[in-house]
Image (tube, rainbow, N blue to C red):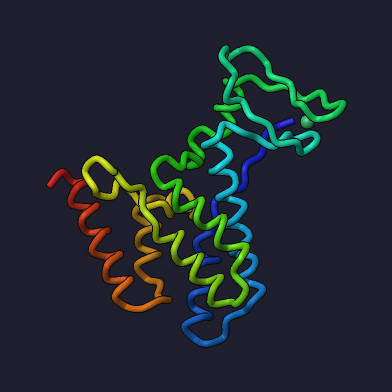
Length: 192
Ligand SMILES: [Zn+2]
């Protein structure tokens, strides 16, 4: 039985919702579907950050944070459950899948709190807009390292930024600030 993580969201889905919004023909079901997909993805990211997993056999959530030996299997605490996993297998299950939230975790946590409380389509879209435009922030130098969208959208880093650049929802100044932040991040990544 394999440990499963929720996948990143296809860029077309995000683009479609924003296009519909711009045309004034927003489909509430499409917003709900997108919001749920992002919520489940954030949940996977937060689980990895806590060294937790959902048992693929019985659904019990448990932690491997105390596993000292990477090769020693840890048993699921679910009733009568036979699932066992080693720390090494666990790490292999999420490695290279963009599930490491690192210093963008506050943005994913905030979305997980805010989105379920959003009632109107606009509130939902605002929560979605905020999390996809978030950054991995480097506290030491007070500059962004990369876009959190890379953890959420099935695209490489530049493609994700290009997609976000083409979307508009909130006030223009917010997008302008985001573009300035992206420009600063790009200069930094080029070592300027
Ligand atoms: Zn189990």
